[in-house]
Length: 582
Image 1 (cartoon, rainbow, N blue to C red):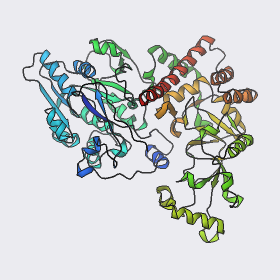
Image 2 (cartoon, rainbow, N blue to C red):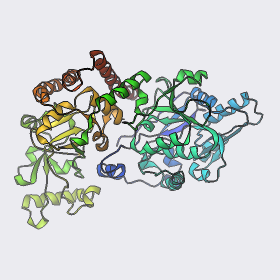
Image 3 (cartoon, one colour):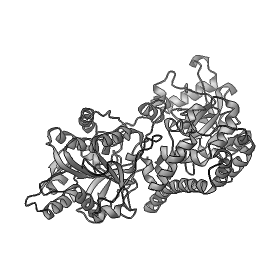
């Protein structure tokens, strides 16, 4: 894996530190989130902390650790959040991961402005040396919180450490605390999630919390229960998107989250513009009620007008979910694609019965159909295209297979996790040919591809089985409409590199139009336009068949503009990352 550069926001050394690392993949699935990730991802062997110091797991940059970059909160952001959160001079304020103290400094200033002679500010940081410099407590917050009194205000920027680098000692402390709050902790959680939840549990009934939180709060599967917890625990949950130039070097997008139980004001999920937050216009809130058809908070990416438009049309269209027509499942997990998936020149020594044509990459899927000519092109480019599928006992195999298996054992393929947990190690499970495939990750937009050439597919692509395979071409064409693609953008998640990732559980809930006969008539034209990368022309062609006739042209254009906005939004994240790396 590539090492991550250290990343800093702001310029001054006094600014608040929060350790950053990208989160592990997440999302709903047929098997459930935990099982889905176990199927797709091989467990990582974690090295022990350097010199036994758990603080190193948060910030150490060494050969035995993943690089965890330091992410700083600009003082202006800390000040804006603290002005909202701290209301009276007697407020007791906590920063549970204070770093070098930018939030503590902002809180002391705010309390002094309110007339406090001895501001009551508490900071906690796992790094004892840093804590000492900030006048804070050097401790693991999850241990410290067990005996903490109730607090009036909690502010901060919790560590963004991905799940497999979450120190086990800290996790052991955090998970029981989450359970006491009525939550069901997942090992997929990054550290910010328990920091946020446990901090909420430390507030007085009239307390306020204001934090810098990864944008993934709005969309990832493991945060679903946390989102529900926030709405259940507070009258108001306010989300603010900071201006792009405020956090110019952070590869992971963030939001500013503010929660309280203030009576007599609009309640529920709300948004506020950053300019209003920074200027103290705290009443300039906009309601953002949840959609019944999307339990994520990704609708916050849209304007209030756009949200109303989509929610109104959802009721009118009333399309059936994907799983009414078929089923999306993960592809084949081999355990070692380089070993089990062969180029044509490598297949000559094996019997035909042990070779299964297979798709290994979305780049091989150029249109909405994958046929014999497409497969021949993959083979002609000398790309891996055949799965070695052997299930017979070792003693029944020929010399070529025996020799290849011996070579795999010498290369330690047999000891890889997915291989060593199956018997025999070389028998790749779940090998079957789907009716179609769905892009698991898409750079431009999601797509279903009809398999005219029967192939298996690796777990880089999802497999699709239709209830009526005779309608497969119609379904593949119908998927490429504005409405289904909008739902894809809003129910999936923006993965690294600006791509959209859909997990099977999300894909199975996407709305699909009826597979009407007219879709057969446009199939070839749509396929040609996708191959030419003219995606919006393809979408317009499909829209003309599947969208209701009473939807006016202006309304169709408005929906496509929203789709384009969402696509460009995640692509801009990729562009910003590329500029930073340069």
